[in-house]
Length: 117
Image 1: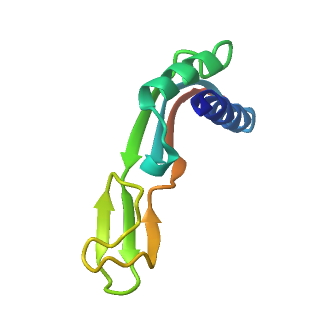
Image 2: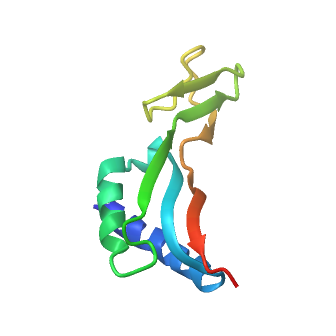
């Protein structure tokens, strides 16, 4: 279950950001995750709620935007989007391809509450 270690890493990043700012509470976190990361969004959301207990991210909502696997054939130039992790051009059959999308793992945005000075 790599979702728990990922949730802990996300929570640690959020805690670091909070320590550098006037954030008092995290309400919502949105992640962009490539399908090749093979993450179960429901499991990640549960793990995030566990990792956030007792922190400023406790009770924060986690949303996951899944990004497709996209690759470009270096022989014919065809772009392929799909669920499969078999990198064969559907147009010409070449395996000479470059991955364009599918490995992303980024915090897209964080909705927070902050102290008013």
